[in-house]
Length: 163
Image 1 (cartoon, rainbow, N blue to C red):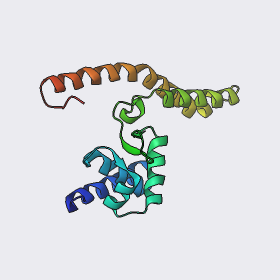
Image 2: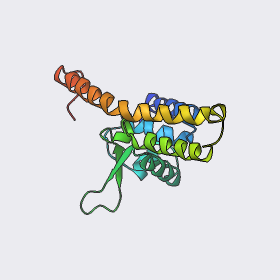
Image 3: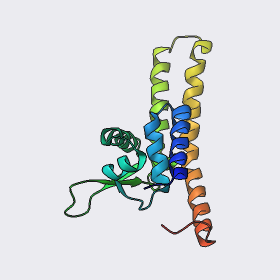
């Protein structure tokens, strides 16, 4: 069973993700708990027991995190249940997934096509939206490379474990 401090941490994560990203508090609670739990892989039942929540609440939160690409599901041979854990290697979990911004740029351009004959003032929001999204699409791969080099340096220095 988790300690009171671990539950408090999960609650703080729930509030943060609810406030910053509009997620249901349970989604953030689950993410926070997955960041600190031992073992790293947990079943829905184990998570429900630890977070004092229903299995359906945990399953729904896990589905949300799965959709966002923040967790990985696995199942050992012979087991009838999934185990979930945070997936820090997925581009979406680290914020380096450029497809989100490519889709935003495409959507902005779709809007710009609708306003082709409109004055620049009317198109200003879409023009800036497309430019910002294009900027992120161009820069995120560079930033990801920088992060990976920095992470490897931290691992080499013993400041991050080699996972």
